[in-house]
Image (cartoon, rainbow, N blue to C red; front, side, top):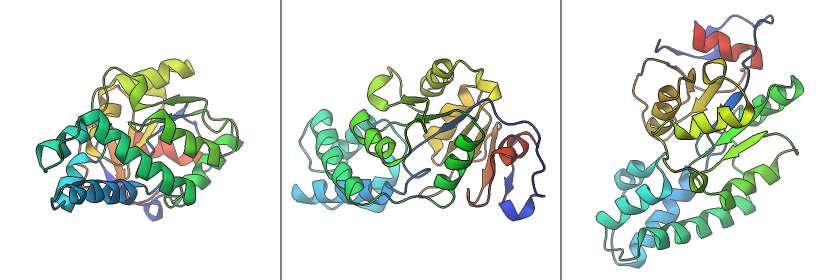
Length: 232
């Protein structure tokens, strides 16, 4: 069921079933790094004499990095290979992330609450391991029981492989988990894997899909809220 709600619409949680695990996207969901990526993309295109636009940048949101790199190459004067484009973008974004971790509202608090209630979490991101590790290092050890990155899967989002891989690594059934995502490819990936999904749109609009429930923010949500929201 696809719904749209806000934490203010919900009655206070009084307990109830917790998800078997929570599977988290990273960019735009836990951390507001999309501006870092957009800035790096703009700088790259402009270094080749082109003009980058937010429209071009938004086409890249949530995709595997090589797909985003191909979009940039096909729509700009950049002549680097997709692999080289990814390297340039990662260098810029990793540097910015090490300087400052821009947490999304409510994300860090929800991660801490899940850890306190011993609900395992997985990081499921199309960013590469070198970047995901910066976030992992910024959080208490053991925050993520599994980390699935874009350079560790054969098929990236919107294919279901990343979320199926995360559930398998945690030893849980996809349907017993909750995924948290902010982008269309990410939501489609989680839904295709059979994971009840909480969509928290940020930079780009996320279409209404069966199997995904929309909320405006993670702020104020508790672990007990998660399954109740996606199953209502």
